[in-house]
Amino acid sequence: MSRPSIVPSIHQFRLPKFDFEHWSTRTSVYSQGTDEDEKALIDFNKCVSESAEDWSSAKKLFAVSTCFLVTLNSAIASSLPGGAVFYTADYFHVTDEQQYALPISVFLIGYVFGPLLFSPLSEMYGRRIIMIITFFGYTAFTLGCAMAPTWPALLVFRFLVGLCAAAPYTLGGGICADLYSNATHRGLAIMVLNVGPASGPIIAGFVSPASWRRKYWVALMLAGVSFVPLLFLPETYGPVLQARRDRAARTWVGQSAKRTPLISNKQSLTKTLSVALIRPFRMFSEPIVLATSLFMAMVYAIFYLFFEAYPIIFGGVYGMSTGVSALAFIPMPIGACLDIIVVMWWERHLERAKARNAPWALNEEYRRMPLACIGGPLCALSLFWLGWTARPTTHWIIPMLAGIPYGMGVEIIFMALTSYLSDGYGTLTASALASAAIMRSILGALLPLLAQPMYAALGVSWASSLLGFVTLAVAVVPFLLLRFGGRLRSRSRLCRQVGDMKVVAAVREGQV
Image (cartoon, rainbow, N blue to C red; front, side, top):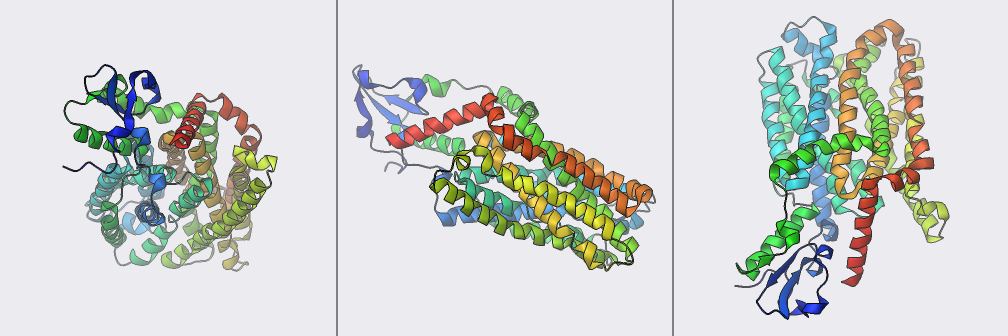
């Protein structure tokens, strides 16, 4: 029987007893033999690397593309009822207009609970298996939406769809962190994952007049296409890959292999799961996580409020049909795509600064935070632009173009802050992103419920301006982190632990 390629020759690790390193310095070590002066050791830190960071560019591209496709399903599903929900409400004889926002709100409530479950599970069992199971649930519950017999049944299925659809958003950032240690590459990969929610109302606006169920059938067809590459998605999570090397080596060494105390001392599944489930809530004790989550939550909630506000603005002020008014969302993904140019320019500027050893370029906060400083004012500008140009005497294209700066702002904020969290929290990235997802989903579920009464009471101009002022208030967060982020990270126990792990990994890499 041939030895697995991931395990080096055992003769490389025959060392005298007095040369043994302390057990705590080894990630996985097995001993075999009975000689007191000499034992056969397998040090997995010196085995052939199985880290996702060392994969080929093609394999990484496939993993990111698959994540994008699955996340696109989730993004489209989140906004699918937007702008055309009254067709569904008419079918089920729902007359209360405040209930029109419920299909989106209950979906986002699912986003609250999904990260609590799937994020820690992914850190226990790996990204791949959780992605596949949750996407299967997403597909099944989307079918339930398409065949829902009653309004309450539709809302229940929407909640379950949101619960399962939270996994790609939560785990996508973790997968990107697994694949790319380079902050530039990781940031661009995360940016790609955040494009898509504006497509939902466009699909719904054109297919819903024939039947409200058709939009869910379209989502189901997209899910079926996405399932094929997902089945071939490789595992990326480092500890799971390490465990596979552990099992392969143990199979080769044989039954006489003895586990060291480091390996055998494991917590029970129940205790591990209970600790992992409360971790996203404990992350709110981290000032960095709390501040970034609040900022992302507000711009995210306003984005979902647009799915209720745009029909009021472009349908009410300009008299557009459902399908045509949904086209008003097109400038948002255009703005998101323009961000790629901005980010690439910034990365080139940053690399040049590093090459000449500019002091500011060595500061962790300056990798992404300046971009987030731009995003907040862009979102506020968009809201004031929309509010004070949407009137019958102004051509409809003028307020519609306000979506470009908002699309740019939202995308650049999410890219910058999720990358910042990934850099700071390393293997705990999924839990940090889960904390952010919880807060933004709660606000995203509640704020759209206020759209109808707020725009009815204040009018388009002042309702949009109110949102603009709130956005300006939270836009100070990246400026504060730019100034005090380093101090906060140095005081964070979790950030210090991640930093120590990076130092140890770099030392081991240099020794190999």
